[in-house]
Length: 186
Image (cartoon, rainbow, N blue to C red; front, side, top):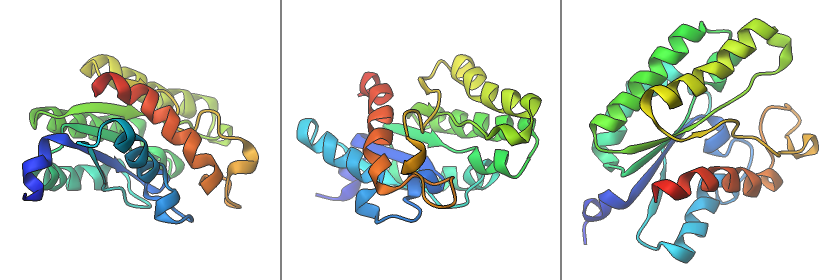
């Protein structure tokens, strides 16, 4: 049976290095673990990881149309914005780009789960507060579920030496965070 025959069962993970498995084996990444978890109960679902390390919301916006056409997902997990924040991009631009990604996903009949991110405090309270608010505002505006912080519960020792990317040991926790918000969409 052609792959496209199953397209309505696709879950598209659309993120950055936190979803692309930066610094770890792909089989250890949370999207791969999510696929394994779902196969136990929903073997009809296919997790497609279209995440790219270093991706920004503007890069994601350029790619989302093609990814939607190619994979025809029923659900899109949007995990972008961290690189925008770490590079000090204007929060307004990040919000506009994420808004367009969500809107395009919904126009293509996909339900959206938004994964939020937090920035280190050294970016200043005003910037980090406004950055975090982007995700809450978009969740309310589009009436979509929000995982407030993708890395919730990841312990400090579960980060790679760069203190930004989780180790393989943290991936089951991240997968669990995603799964809790994803379940209602399934």
